[in-house]
Length: 422
Image (cartoon, rainbow, N blue to C red):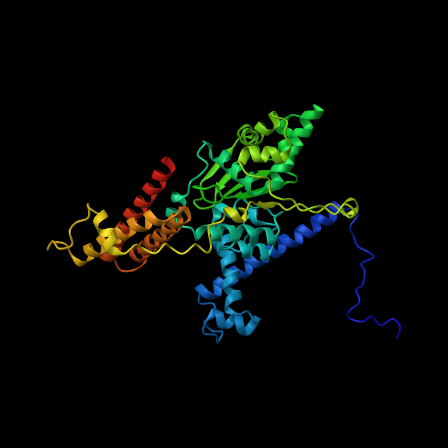
């Protein structure tokens, strides 16, 4: 009786057929590949039940009923199996898994189903499910931003190439990465060691693959892919799918463009950051000296996402708009507006005229934050109009409203430029 083992106890594996780690790793990979192929085959077999008359004498009225009664597969699970086959099988309708997706496993393939091919093609089996979910969340967040909003953003205009704009934003939002690269180059130069190129690549690519995501203003989210056997890097626009092949020379040049001025002036990383970005280096959390030396080295993530610091985020709770001045006091200043008494002016045009007068008053009374609030409000109105035009029956009123909102945005931008010039 003493040999009875309770359910909560674990039984250690004391014997196995593996002579070395590499052999064991290959065995695990083969099983994962086999499992992925099984998911694709199951999806294909469910398609057979859906698309042919194989169930005609089975007594089942549909493939969903067959899957539920015979194998306890609900409709959602059946749909996922079929989607996996649609996307990851050879010719998208066979029982054979595409070679490039071997080694992922069902969980990761399932996360990738809703991603566009141009994004999932940048993945490798080394990525974890959590890392894929992180990239997926970035993609979905970017899709919620309209093209018009991206066009209205002011980018870093002194960076003439996309890779320079990307590295500028990446180092700004991931100050710890700026510090790591900056200090590695500084110490290497002091020691007269390797070339800058080798040091920078070593820092940016600590493993076999590394994906960096940042959002340069005016471009939208972009992903930089570095891989061990890759000659250079790939810069992918997550919004549009446009891809650039970046040479090692251009990558190194973009990095040095951000850090060289501080290094040349023999400044530490905090001063180098301040020199480049005209703001203090973010406050660092103190390390626990008594713990750090004995802790195992933390596994580095394959995915690095640069998130803006709180002050760079859009204002979530904008200040209330200033109250418009009394209309009788504003009307005399709007001399160019058409007279509302003229008979050929419609009621819609009258309302537009009054709105323009109101906007003039708001612009006159608003501070910089108030101007931003007005701009965001007009952008939302314009997006709503475009949505109504595109998704519903064509509306002439919505078109006129969109034109009015556009004119008001131009007026707001002119006020912004006037204040900058003044």
